[in-house]
Length: 228
Image (cartoon, rainbow, N blue to C red; front, side, top):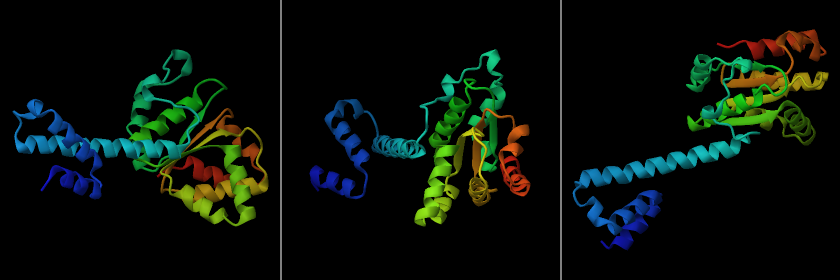
């Protein structure tokens, strides 16, 4: 079999990165001459896996539509931020995602809530979890459009499939009855199936005042605060 045929077969099997790495080995025979066949094959397989992993992470990151390109290594731990490295490290491990737990981040404007939420989201993408970021007002607008054009249920289904949902700027405005019901639908679809990070300037003790119906407020905030 000719090498060109072999590379065509590898690409047909969707092993394009494997093929590229093999071409590199062929072009640098002296570099690999002391390796056994198994060692060279292992290098090729490892290269294919690493490239696939990078491609998957890049796709998840694009789909997340994060507001900020935030990284765990750049989190600001200065004392006035009130962040504990041990707690952040526990969150970065991703265990909260495996347990379908929610996270609530509160604090004044500029304290780093959005950055921390996006850093956790980036880490989740690196761990191969599906993520979606929304400013709360943006999500509510999309759901309102979905009710009008008949895609509301499909929207809920899509949101339910995201392992991590980030709702930023929670509580910037009081919710209407319709908005509160829509948000309750979202949280009920995700309850005990996935995780949600909520970032808000408003203390949680004030959240009830933002929801017109006490019954809906109890149900919605119960879903937000309760984790398995």
